[in-house]
Image (spheres, rainbow, N blue to C red):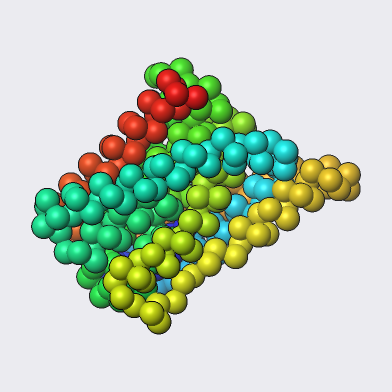
Length: 324
């Protein structure tokens, strides 16, 4: 859920300067073609290349577009899922979720002190890694009253690692010969943003996609208690908490698909449209990643993010394989 990106999406160097009408035409044409010729991970790279070579003519709209498109896509994917399977997956992932969130936040606090990272930046990186990436950062930032630079650095770290996860996780999953169930649970817990979770799981198989989406959205609800705890720690009684209401629509979509026979004929079409929406979303996320993000992050926050991510990925994978 790539929200609150505005602070890091400033126009960067581009390789080919073209007139605005041509720039807009190139961008729109390639955006429309991305669902036809590219998988979600490739679409992200495609968007990154296009924006950095020709520029992003609609940069100020990018963060809103990705936010709404992702929510629409996730709700649409709900029409391809079964409530009973989702509940079973949610129960299995519940313990993993609690342990991973608590341990990641604790480790993130110690790493932040070790690297002497700014306290608010460190907390945002930890929350983004522990819960659901950009959405968690967007929810926690107003609670701790972080400034634009602090929020931008945290988002930059998360977006860089999300991009890598789209390619690394499916490759590692196939290399280790994980089942769809194992992979779905793993990427739901160890990948930051919902978009990257869904993108990676969709490459692995339908069962992995269902498990990953369900567990990840259940995990996103932990934004609420974590935000309340954060408000207490940072002594902010007036902090506003952004609740991911679209998760309720996702649940309704699953219920409709499970219990309404009328959905049998239209559900596949809705899921297909949702997958197109996901591909377009990742194209736009890639288009929002530019050189300024890399410049703004810095080595210490990036090192903290990488170590946290490595910890949660390896610890979760070992737990899923050997302690299930």
